[in-house]
Length: 98
Image (cartoon, rainbow, N blue to C red; front, side, top):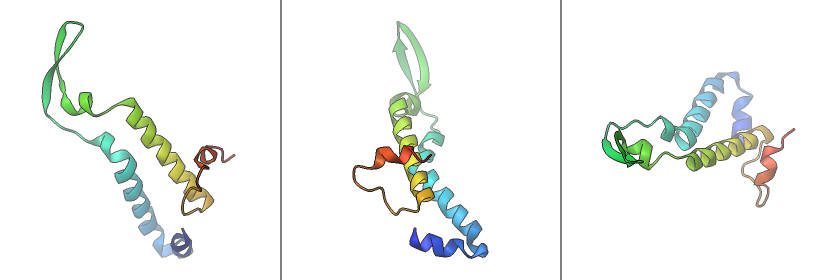
């Protein structure tokens, strides 16, 4: 964050900073939800068989999405407070910035 603060003061760096933040956050927390795979398999539920996307059935789940969103919020909170890292035992406080 110290380097970022120095870069922010120069208006010429703003587009570079925005691109860096986008790439960093997108690849860490969001890219997996945009992933597309065309492989399908036959799945059965309640006696009904359906051809479904393997990635969506086997790997995408609500817990993973919740965890990624929570980590993204914690990261954004660290940006807002200017901290390099979340202090041990303080992650729950990242959600109370008001």
